Amino acid sequence: MIKELNRVMDYIEDHLRDDFSLDEIFERAGISDFHFRKIFFHLSGMTLNEYIKYRKLSEANKDLLDGERVTDVAFKYGYQSIDGFTRAFKKWTGFLPSDVAKKGISKSFPKLSFILTLKGGIPMEFRIEEKPRFNIVGVSGRVPMQFEGVNQEIVKLAMSITEDQRKEMHALQNMAPYEIVNASYDADADFIREEGYLTHMIGVLTTEDQVSDKLDKVTVDACTWAVFPNEGPFPSTLQNTMARIYSEWLPSSDYEIIKAPNFSFTKFDKDKKDYAYSEIWIPVRKKQ
Figure 1 (cartoon, rainbow, N blue to C red):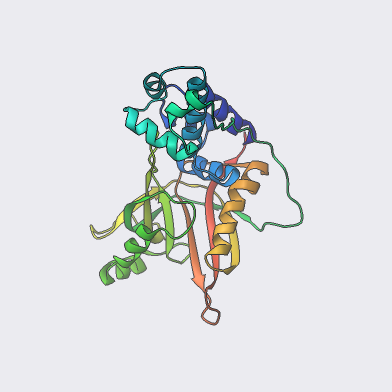
Figure 2: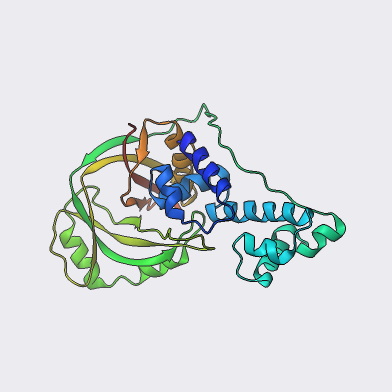
């Protein structure tokens, strides 16, 4: 995984002036767009879009120091207007592009390189399970990608579920885990953008194919799953486990993520406030 990440960094560096598709990046990484974004975020502490933007602005700063015109630099790095470039540059640096050459001030953001450092002392529990083809059926919607905090659009989606939809999901559910799951898939990845969306489904696992028009359905082919149980204060324990999966377990394990929905479920403890048991299910395969 570290080798693939650094290969992607090289690719981005070679195409900072191009209007390249993010699909090309994910193909080089050999994993789905959403999972790559999560791995990158948990390793670097920033989104992929932020990294690309900062690298472009850093190189733009160098060109301005060399005396290139603001107009030429703005269009070189893909900005459609001088105003858009000026706003982005000032927000990042704190000064105007025109100040760079006049005052000789600058700000830099170096290219990232990833090195694997193993952290000992904190074991991570997981198990590997095989599952046949199944469907996830439930209520879905496009929500903004968000790797930290509470996603309010998912909260709204959960509140929109009707009693009829709940009854049908309960009747269809016939496969472990016998819980209401949260699944994510089909993330945006066409072009570099400030924000992207993915499909989030709240539903159940079933082998049944016949579903009414009240529910949505996504089919998951037979594959291997890495399952990460966790228990503790919610949501911090779940979020910390997710971060460790992408920043520690994946880079050092014998498995790699495949393109399929990942899902999780949470069971709250009735006797402890904001305390829960959760499981995170990640679709994987053995590295070649």
